[in-house]
Length: 167
Image 1 (spheres, rainbow, N blue to C red):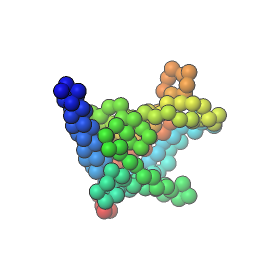
Image 2 (spheres, rainbow, N blue to C red):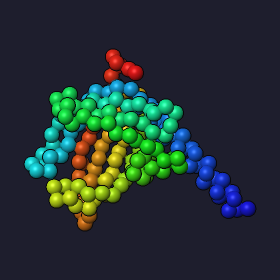
Image 3 (cartoon, rainbow, N blue to C red):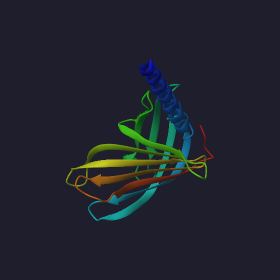
Image 4 (cartoon, one colour):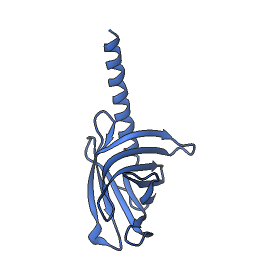
């Protein structure tokens, strides 16, 4: 009986996590204007460029379309599909480590995943931090190379909601 109670509690928690993440990501739906600042590994210096985003939920699913729009570098434009796992533990391949409401009402989600990065394709852990507000959105990627002790800010998108052109 105790095992059944634990399974029911775990299932309820997974559904809560899933619904909470879906609701949080629905809050990003629309058009955003902003910038991307990234670390240029070849120079070791940050570079900032204009970057816009359009975010849409695919019908009533657990998937969202993220349109990355670079006004000055149109060849870099891309579309990504973001899938939230049905148990709410993953955003794509990123494991959700925490989700909390900040004092200003924004939501902060921190995820991690393993991969390779850098000019020499080193093994690394990526930490993604999403800060989602009604009018602002920040998406930051930090990298911890295997064997290193300090995280490096790889890139950060900073957006403001475009209230002139909402879908």
